[in-house]
Image (cartoon, rainbow, N blue to C red; front, side, top):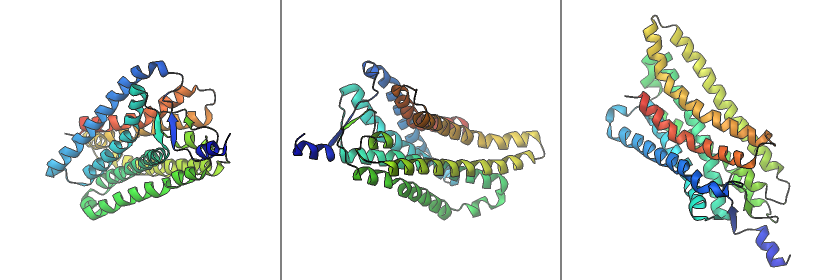
Length: 300
């Protein structure tokens, strides 16, 4: 290989995304449900933002957090789906190296933010049920703004090392990514260097964020359930639990596909590659579609 070619491969100007390897002939058919899910997600989340903005009665902590989740879902789904559909429809597989790192950052950053917003939402439920008389005092507008800022900074700072480390590695093997978007591990695996730092940091962030957030949500719901079961009548218990049902459904719809995709990717060596990539797309696309539907159905 000549020096010029070596330089080009060490610092690639573009990556080539393959879409879903092994299912190239079905790309057009796969694009139909993907496009439908993305369209519903866009319409549903914009509808939530519009209704909350136009209805003064909804200007409270619960709906502020719901708007934060809607914005997160919009950015997350838009970070991957237009490029994925361009691969499926037009076979446009090239992505600029810097654009790939930006896409990587947005995907992981807003995934972490979404998890943080779930914790904020369960905190709101906890205060509303366990300390109802102090709810407006504890979760005032300035406090909600500070929580939102903390969630943004938490996600932005934790994920920042992903693209910074990925930019450091030399890519002298290939610039072909067997994926439909620039997923962190799929990109750094192409490096001809020891990527242990990137791999271990990615695992640490995943377990740290998921572990702490799930622990916080679990502890909060234990306290919430104790408060619900201490209510004097069955109707009061059912009514109060009903206010938590939509949030529980959203959490399950977000965490279960994500955990399944994560563990099959890390430990399912015998699972076909196309199944890995399909699940990696589903766990990023499904929650943004389901969240506005679940909250829209359960909220008058």
